[in-house]
Image 1 (tube, one colour):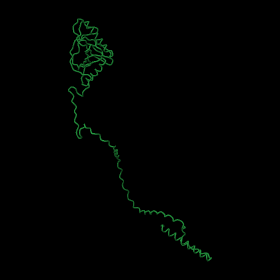
Image 2 (cartoon, one colour; image 1 turned 90 degrees about the vertical axis):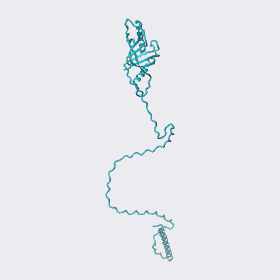
Image 3 (cartoon, rainbow, N blue to C red; image 1 turned 120 degrees about the vertical axis):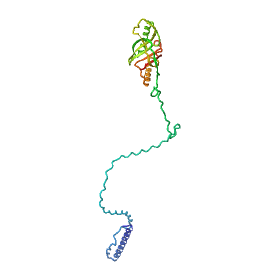
Length: 285
């Protein structure tokens, strides 16, 4: 029912009530009970009641369900495609840092850098330049007459043993009436961590009818091609010089023989042990 129909029904109810009251009053005046008057309309709510609020609009009826269509055959489902791992999305780039200022010394863009060339090694010295702690030179030694005496020593007592051996040779030379004729030499014939074997040599001139004794012999110094090095300093520091000699020979693939010779430019018997001047000869193969 609409809001207008609801108002028309209430008005008809009120008219019916008034008519009944008038008939009843007339009958009461005449002394007879009034006949019941049928209600013209169903009783309505009292007029004093406020009008009822409008009912909310009913929702529109749902559309009729269409007749079901005949079922269509199920479509053929293709086999699932092989799974592929999607390529990872590129990470968002960080805020770009300001470009550095161009280097004024750099060549212009698009210009190839100048080619660099490595100088060829000098003939006879292949490979890169060497950092040498010693310098060698090739020379030839000529034999001279010497008095010799062999000995063995530890490294700790090496210098004292050499000085004592040279003194024994000098004593025998004096006994024979011979004269010293050059710098003394020490030929190292064998060595290890414990010590070394050596032969002390003292050049001489003169003749003697007697033979040397006490282990002293007459001989000749080494003759042949050698590589010469030099050491300045103490006997104990010669290890560093010999290490430099070994590196010098190895870096140049120079092969020496299994012994070496020291020629004492300063006399070991009189020079201070820490102020020696020694030529080192490595006989070459």
